[in-house]
Image 1 (cartoon, rainbow over the protein chains, first blue to last red):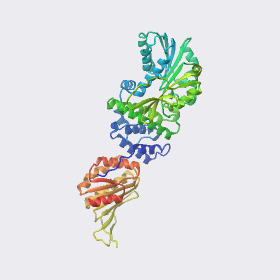
Image 2: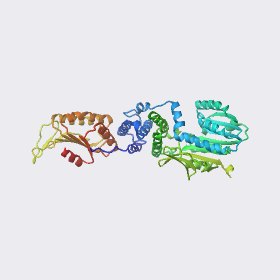
Image 3: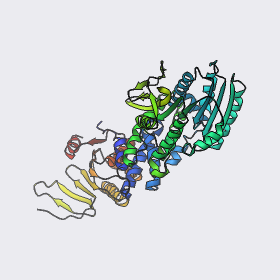
Image 4: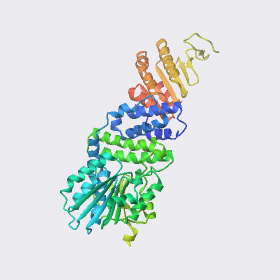
Length: 367
Length: 150
């Protein structure tokens, strides 16, 4: 039987994105509707269709409605916050192993330290810090830990406070949790000094998937400069290795597609059921909506490639370290973890390094 | 010599060399032309550019109406230069296939469109019409060659 090859979904989407900003004509809207209709067929079995649907959904703010409403189709894939939270922490390798590796770096750095303030930017509910505190039980030298948890969302910070209060009695060292509800870009030295008070000890800073929420380059530099003034023994950044800071819409779309295409392939490889898989993809739809569907000034998911974070750290007086772990875990799922010559630890799937772990020290401490 | 005949709504041409051959324009507008070859009992639809939903359905209806009154054994649908078709219009085209087959249609050949969105439209049609009777070709020459053998 003579048939014809299925048209490339990416090529069709690429064509639609090239209409931005002012060529979304009535015919273009029918093209969008046609692509959407194609993608909604067997969407649960095809990651590329799922991703394209999420990108088209994100275009709604720019294009307006078309004949098909994808919300009805996507709604059935929604999962509860608890399910999502557990999936991200326990199953999604970039979060699970990103936390694990940055905790290992901090644990190693604190080996001979007696007193430390850990500043965690974007602490959320404090799950990563709970794991670090549990790990620090093995450190016999440590006497006092102060954890300054910075988080803009009150509910998450309240949950973190509860978690920290619960673990406190299990810890063999003095422990104090200081919650600070603010956005990272609003941090200032005065506030930090007020929170910390007089303290004789070291400072270590952790920012896992947090700093890309800072909207402007100036604010990013400002925050890193403040961190540098604190003269920490180390700073660990975990960031998606992709350029969503890019102001040009079309190039940002291309970066977005490439990144999430691979992220979705990783999700497909996870040993979870289809419903959880789709729910996880839907979660990333929120990031995609920010990257594609919002005006640049209203965006918060502004990832940058690792080399640009490294440039900023160096600019602010940090020395970036490479080969900072002796043994790298084998996490499976087709993801290779390895040190990159540019100065970071990369999580690579297929040909794409999707996540970076960057470790730097204050330059005065490195000499 | 060309001779005007009353047939459906349009013009019929008689070819003076072959009295069995009648070339008839069944339906025509800026975006589609439907012709009938009486010798081969073949309808050829040639689509150009984007056609509004209403005009698309009128063309489909004209095809069905003609097939109800005349023997149509094969159809070539040349979509090479056709623009995108709304998903519900693609569904409408699918919905008339049983009628056409019921009236004696043996085979239908599509010329694959260049436009990627029209390809998606045709793919939707193809997914709903999985049959040896409908096949897809790169050119009208290939399409006609296959239909000639059916």
